Every structure is written in C-alpha cells, then in structure tokens.
Image (cartoon, rainbow, N blue to C red; front, side):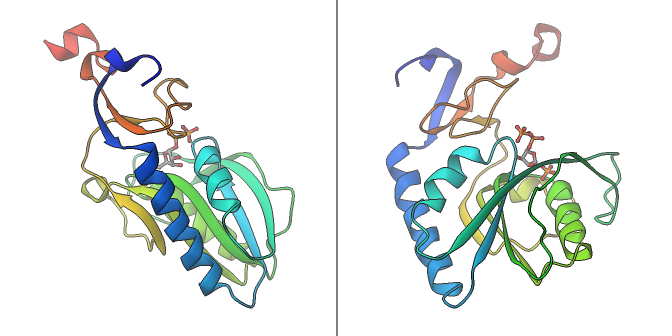
Length: 187
Ligand code: PRP
C-alpha cells in the first residue's frame, strides 16, 4: 500500500482480484450483448474507476454517459423519489442500457434509477455492479452482473470514498472505525 495504510484495517479485495473479476464480467457482457450496441450509464461518482476498467475490456460498440442521482427519503418504496443532480446527455429511448454501479447497498438508488430509465423509454435496462452488500438490502433489485458479494463493512477504494477520500486506492479495503465514527459514537 502506497499511503494511508494506517487508516485501513483490512484489504478486502486486492487490485489483482479486482482486475481478474472485471475481465470476467466484461467477457460475460460482451457475450450477452453479441448483436447489440450497449449504452453504458455510469452512476457518479463512485463508479468511474470500475467503469473505466470494465469499458476497455468490453468488445462491443458502446455509448457511454454518466449521471449523478440520489434517492431521498428513508422510505423503502422502490418507486419513491430520485433526485438527478447531473443528468444524461444522451437519450436512452430504445437503447439497451447497462447501468454501472460501484456498490449496491439498500438498493434504493438503483431501483429508482431503473424505474426512471424504463419510464424514459429504454429498450432494456440491466445492471452491473462491482460490489453487492446483500445484508443491507431494503428493496429487491435485480443485479445482472455482480463482481463480488461483500459483508456489511465500511469499504473504500477503487472509486469508493469516505468523505470524498480514498477513491484512488487500487484495492477495496475496510476503513478503520475510528476514521468515520466520532469519539462519542465509539465510546
Ligand atoms: C453509493 C453508490 C450508489 C449508492 C448505493 O453512492 O455509488 O449510487 O450509494 O446505495 P443504496 O443501494 O443504499 O442506494 P454515494 O451516495 O455514496 O455517492 P458517490 O458515488 O458519489 O460516492
């Protein structure tokens, strides 16, 4: 580890493990979309590292666009509200959309995003996520391509952040609790 190793309690996924799995996902996607162009939709911010690596190994015609969208409210209704902070520049109408996410936690963001893309007229909407935390799920959401299922731990790296930091780590690591909990919370 090049830096801030003392902030991390454990390397959950090494850069080599991630690299191998990303290659496998790209091969699956390439095979599944054998006669279609793919519209890849990256969900900012966390997906940008995963998407960049995945994209370069997908051997199909692709259009790439990004959006920043957050679900809000604490309700667990998958048809609830989604706030789009930065919208797509390319229309999804009649496109075969592949949403790329870094992590699926409660599933609220993704379930609402899928509904929005379907309402906008996408021909199909599939999902590829690097990390799946099933223990945290509040709404059911179909994940078509999953890199790794992980336990309910606070992970950073490979695009994932704590307070916008650690996104540049080449691995996925567990952040020490004292880095994200206040002293009063820890005590
Ligand atoms: C993360 C992740 C998903 C969402 C998943 O984004 O990229 O978009 O949370 O959580 P959910 O399944 O509980 O809805 P985050 O809000 O941390 O923003 P970021 O990508 O900008 O770091």
